Length: 229
Image (cartoon, rainbow, N blue to C red; front, top):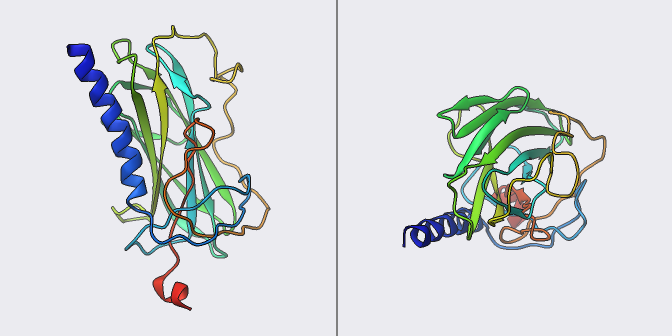
């Protein structure tokens, strides 16, 4: 009974995280392709939020996770505007059952369950942030587990964009040096990178989970006045 209740709680928590992101979605418009998109991704408006135009994605290169397994989460924040975004704040929140092994470069840990980074982002550029985590030995082996990432303007508490990464929980033993795709989990991407590609973006509805891996892109809404125009 205890296992069943814990499994149910993990599943509910993961779905709640995804639902929270979905509830931020506004009316859909055709979505255009952005750098590193496959052209099929749909963005997500954040209602009632004003701030810089950007999108966020989080992925740990896994579809499943089990007790004892480690994974490196990569968060990517992309600017969708011409001007710079100064004092950008990025936060990753870990769910119960997941422990932080090591924050990536520049990451500051708060309460053991949240990692925060700050950066200045040039127009139409992107930045990456990483954190290594481990599924606790006593974590459930069924259901789902969600980690979330959000981006904030400097000095504000309301997130401009958020995205979850959801994994299915299994009873598989921990795999050594496994990044979830058969590669070396230690081959982490750079903490920060920039792209010279220009960005074309659109607004879509809902949060999309890509290929079951939980990669979700989220787009901030344009100003209401601009949309009416």
